[in-house]
Image (tube, rainbow over all chains, first blue to last red; front, side, top):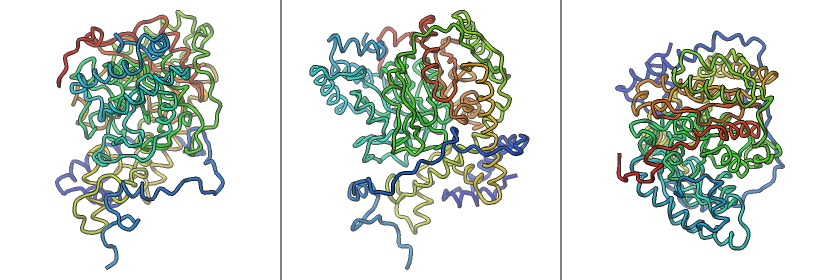
Length: 94
Length: 494
């Protein structure tokens, strides 16, 4: 069901590096987990609405008003790298 | 023996001037310094802040401004953000993270005058059932230090079981309060989804996560829940429901109570001695006037499979924020943006967290969404419908909290699925958003067993009432490991 190529592809989507050496064991473990969850396929769910909030509650809305103070310096202080009030990342466009 | 006292007794002692909050706080800080090396229950100890909070509490008491929790120490799970104190979620990813704000749970307990002793160890990002996935190393169970305390709130459970703190906070996504409470002989309550604010609680699976108290007694759990519960506009799924007086109903007799016993919770996976202890506890409740009713929750077996689609899917989305840009760990010398993301995440997350992110990413990827995520959410409704139907004819549901007592360190780490089955009896209630608690109900080979009680949405008062009545008739909740009882535990690493 899940093969090495799929594991590599999913790891790429998740931005997680998986070394060649790790792939066989990871493929097997993920395969086992997916085999376990495959029990779901036997359930009769015809006409059953998916349940996303356990209380069937819907998202509460609030007025579109500014409620937070400006904390730019405080938040940037947490960043691994910042400059002139901006988060710093490796160059994206040459 | 200050460290053996409940929150209730500590509050009375403070009120009567038997000891000050500063003396009490020093007593627990001393125990932590001496005994934490053998349990590894705390990641961070906040001695200076604790003593400052204690002195402020003593001053408040002198001014006649003390509430029932003022001046009493507590341990906070390291998943709750705390201003100025590292919040690691037991991950290398957040080893250097100092939150700029307090979680609502933390600010509410601070406002109640409680004294934070420190931040407790846990499974990394709350993903685990044994506290063995922590980047800071496993926690040892004070009942037997060769055994796990359960997880993910294992540090909180060990801290209270070893009486390094009189109570602690936990979070429960699939059993992470109730299973460690069961394995460490505590009362642990997971309230209704939305009862306690999730704001500032680092997210794992947002439709399942819920905070709650881990205490010595149901009375203490009621005291803490009173301070923790309530509507919070900062949490979009916080429920705007009135908070009742949780102490008011504790003394109600059990006569007429109908307790449903689901056959599915006593199936093949249950350890025989654990089952016998749970049956004895049920007989006790029956002798106190309750009626036991056999019920069926037919979709129980599908709960673990549904959970291991929904929780990893939500985890893969929530943990996408850890990218090495805004806070937390960043890899060394990134070559480009993709290398920054990928190496930061590969180096910052542990094996179980990565596994769940990959499962979730797969389940949500194009072509698989209907087969996995949608299907799991449909089954989730079937599971909730089972409970709704059962609560037509019973008031609460009872069974084991965990299939076996504490197991040995390393015993279940080889196969993730074996570990996942630890939560077979606790996961269904998270999927259904129901409140549930575990109370001590016996010992098997000297290790605690938990009785789980489950109620309809917002029935915390009823669950605490049943648990409190059970604790009036039994003394399992008063049992502590022999060395803790005598107070002469040896310090140093185990």
